Amino acid sequence: MALVDLHGREDEVAVRLLLRLAAGSRASAQEAARRYATKEWLLIGWEEAGEIVGCVGISREGEDTLELHSVAVANDWQSRGIGRALIEALVEVADRAAVVAETDEDGAGFYHSCGFEVEAAAPKAGRARFRCLRGPGAGPVPRAQPGIILGEIEQAIRRLGR
Ligand SMILES: CC(C)(COP(=O)(O)OP(=O)(O)OC[C@H]1O[C@@H](n2cnc3c(N)ncnc32)[C@H](O)[C@@H]1OP(=O)(O)O)[C@@H](O)C(=O)NCCC(=O)NCCS
Image 1 (cartoon, rainbow, N blue to C red):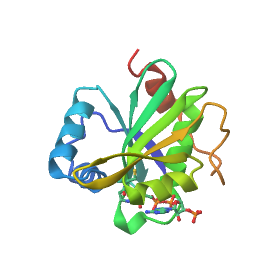
Image 2 (tube, rainbow, N blue to C red; image 1 turned 60 degrees about the vertical axis):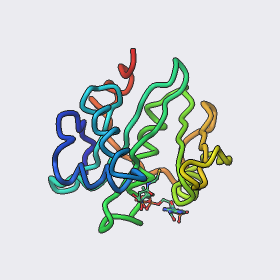
Image 3 (cartoon, rainbow, N blue to C red; image 1 turned 90 degrees about the vertical axis):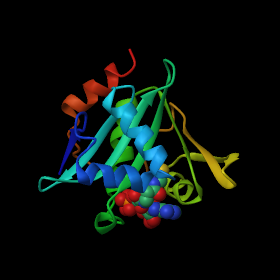
Image 4 (cartoon, rainbow, N blue to C red; image 1 turned 90 degrees about the horizontal axis):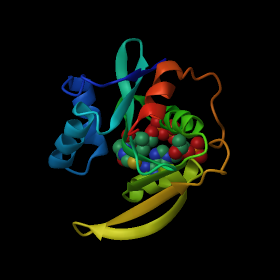
């Protein structure tokens, strides 16, 4: 397993599939891909045996807040703790920043189990939306998986939006 920077790889089939899995529509997946390609947002992948099987996108929303986007794990790799480990890596790197995400009902359950506070947000296109927050003092993600090597990804996140 490795965490990899997916900048420049937005058009790869595996990455496109993950962005589509995470987004509510093809249009929002394309919009996210554009933001990753222009480096407005940073896209990090989870690689297993040379295959990208999960991803998480990040943007900096002000000095003290990181926002997550495009959280997805390929169907065959779900329910093995990869989604939680991706969030754990981000929370660790976020250091003293708050981490926020906006998501639908399915995502809300996932974030809740990763220790986020979840509250209702304004519905979009008739569908319920939720705002998820991990405050700066919230500590590690529950049942954290040890041994994730962050290396250059950590530095890339620290540079994001600065
Ligand atoms: C949501 C998603 C990223 C989770 O990834 P995953 O690798 O399968 O999740 P994990 O195995 O790390 O599960 C972590 C915890 O979240 C819970 N969880 C996962 N998906 C959930 C869901 N849809 N609803 C409620 N809880 C969920 C798991 O039960 C687990 O909790 P537990 O250990 O207390 O049982 C993945 O299912 C996915 O890509 N879904 C489609 C895309 C999507 O909905 N993205 C929106 C998230 S913002």
